[in-house]
Amino acid sequence: MSPAVMGSILATVVGLIPLPPGSITVDAFFDDWLEVPLVPLDKTVRGSLAGPDDLDARVQVAVIGDAVAFALQVRDDVFQRGTATTGDGVEILYRGPGGKTARVKLILNALEGHPAELRLGGRPVEGARIASTLRKDGWAVEAAVPIAILPGFRDGAVGLALTVRDSDRDPSETEALLTTSPLAADGLPALENVRFDAALGIYGLYQSERGGTLSELARIKGDLAGDALPEEVVINDADVVVAGRGLPDGATYYYFTHDWGAGATVSRLDLMELDGRPGKELVLERVEHPSGVDVTVLEIYGVSGGVLKRMFAQKLVEVFPDRGAEVRSRFKVLPRPAGPAGKSVPARFEITRAIVRGMDEFTYPPEPPGARSYQPIPLPWHGGGSLFYSLSDDHWSRE
Image (cartoon, rainbow, N blue to C red):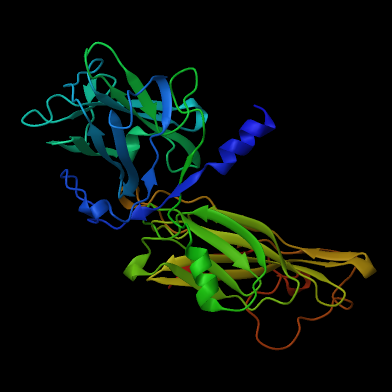
């Protein structure tokens, strides 16, 4: 693929956000679509229109719960009752990651009395909803298809196009085939033009309301709230931020002020299910550089009870570059037994006793005085083996 084509693809990706449940009803009345942007149906695949009055369409796409909804209002001088291959017709074309595809046909039928149908592979689409109507100047269809029939829809940028087939005089002939997005030789979308993004714009809202200048250190996406919608996690030099739609109690973001030292960096950022509840926990390692030492601290954050909490923090590594010395322990998530009825149980952690190189008990600098947010490194001269931690009241505590 040429750089020019790749640039075009990147430039055309549109973010789709989930609308609140109940905000759109599939009933062939379109007042609830007023705030949804229009998608141009302006590319001719084959044939041509006879003129501006031949066909003109108003197309909109939205995500509602577990469905992708389409609103299609068409001004058409002649309506030809449609079948799978003849007359006027509509097709939803999808190309997802890993070569996964779908073609959903909207069979228009007579619309009134014999409403439009949705078919995938020649069969009715299970769980789909559709409503259709004739108008004095054309026709209209409102439809919602389950996201499950569009594999990989939530995983990143995908190709999504809608085509309208126009037949005026002879229903066996297609006079014009129009599409919302360019099609490849296989008839499926040529561009990755849509990305489902439940967190679109929320971090910007946090920045505006938080105020000040914040330097971003790292970000990742995933489901922390257990609501099946991915949140955006952003680490900046002041806060850990979880931003997204569908958070408990109508919140759009949570943040936790992390109290790190100036100049801290993030060396690890993962999402793991650790507490046995829906949603994942954020696992990060931060590196700070106080005088004469590089310090690595592991931290775990999770959303629980409508709050973003720091659930565990452990100093793992100290490196003394000027002294050629280091103190290094390891963090392990221990294997978990199956819970009752197959449910997940909280993870247990092991922090190994540190291995020390280049110093001993008498030359190792003691932990600085004062409060700290993390557990200190378990040192070999304190005796014993690894330390173990289990979940208690939303925090991992030493057993």
